[in-house]
Length: 199
Image (cartoon, rainbow, N blue to C red; front, side, top):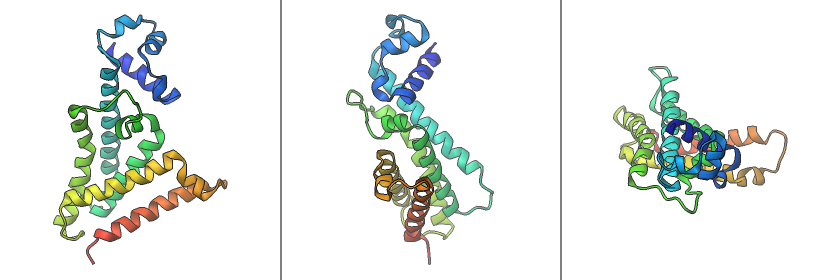
């Protein structure tokens, strides 16, 4: 039943945004009384925290899959680019869950320390890719955490601007705007990577 509640909550968020999420709405969708749901989630905050885990876990799963799709001899820069692309695709496909996890889009929810720790799984993948680049001599000798944080901040900033519509607004709305945004993202990632590549 807990998985059914979470899946229903996720669909409500995907279809109606975070403000569509309520215990009453979930109960109506699955045919239970709201009181029955409280056996699994004592408060809406507990439900939001579980969705945070799902959001962060989903992101890390996407990022791991992106790494697994690469050839064994692909370099660290390719690994970081794959991770950045996976992060962006996740955010664009599930913007409300992404904002719940990383943008605190719900005024009545703030992730606790346990939830924040769960979100570190995706960051750890970035750190590992950065460390392999430093250790292998591809990247300049910086702490892997600094490179990973720079990548995360850059991709996150781009994605937040993209989700808000600001990038598309600046480009106007031509028929090829999606392609132009993709090209901008690729160029941004190239500029970022050029900053820590060993010359």
